[in-house]
Length: 430
Image (cartoon, rainbow, N blue to C red; front, top):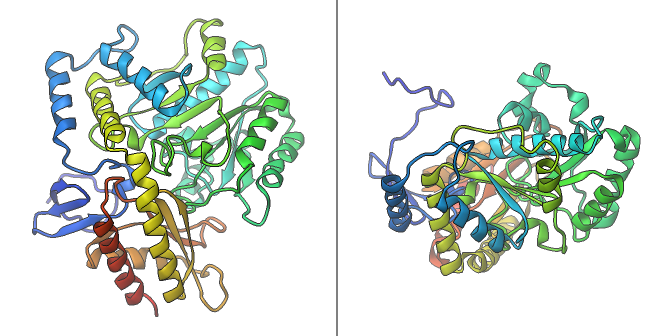
């Protein structure tokens, strides 16, 4: 009997080691990591340079508490990260995971308005579907029915209003104007922030609004005194072919950027947020402190991992590689769509790509979810890990498959991924 509390009742293979885009288990099976875990392992597995950097930092300084010390590695990383993201004057708040980063952004938005005397601003507008994390505040902000349904009695739903998801039939500007309408309905003086994923991940694979959306959203937020938060936990750090996905089409700078996953690429728990000078200075010149914190925030060993990961991203030009290999993979996915009728759409940016699955007879989602899980299971039999999901249409209906291999994937490995996915789609065609 195992003493591990697993995430579900299904059996779990025991992973033994990993290298590049491949994972190996205790039976000797090699599997292509087509989703980088949960779009985390951006630089690939088994990078000795990252492990060496972590070991060296652990020998020198393993832990300090953020209320007592900073560290040289945190100071260096914050400067390097701000430059990489094109946010040179922003401040980095470090935490251990994406949910903690979202919680931090929510609390920071609330405190920012309170410091300005606008204590009536408490609402955080997000979209449906969306996913911002598993902790209670992050889950309340999420518009993902299946994951939040059990816990809704613990949430003040009035604090978490939802917009509809991006509509590809609308121009980006017209799509964004729905935010203005909701602000007027709610009373903008009650709204602290609007938060969105520039490219949606787990809740509606690789869905993104049209060009002009984020620029108009930023304008509307400024007009009504609302903070604009870009949740780049999954889509940031080069995953979509740019340091920040919110800037794929628009020259826009959010007030807060939430980051995670690719920061340390799975080598250590690391996430955080970037706060604009206005947000940072308002809080620090008010009460003098952000009234929030976690024990392991800014952990030196995790930050050392992040610094080494950033070296690899820049030295190996992995942002550019995400565009090149992403174009190859998207072309292949579109070819699979033409061949397999239950693939309704192939879409995405860089190496954050998705398939929308459904009924070829109607071109709509099946009434009963489960197709994505069946495709993912079939893909696993063919040596490929994917990221299945459902609920994109109404919280229950709407199957989709997310693909996000390491940014270091080669052209030959993309072809291998596509061949395995082709076989899985053939197996589930009936």
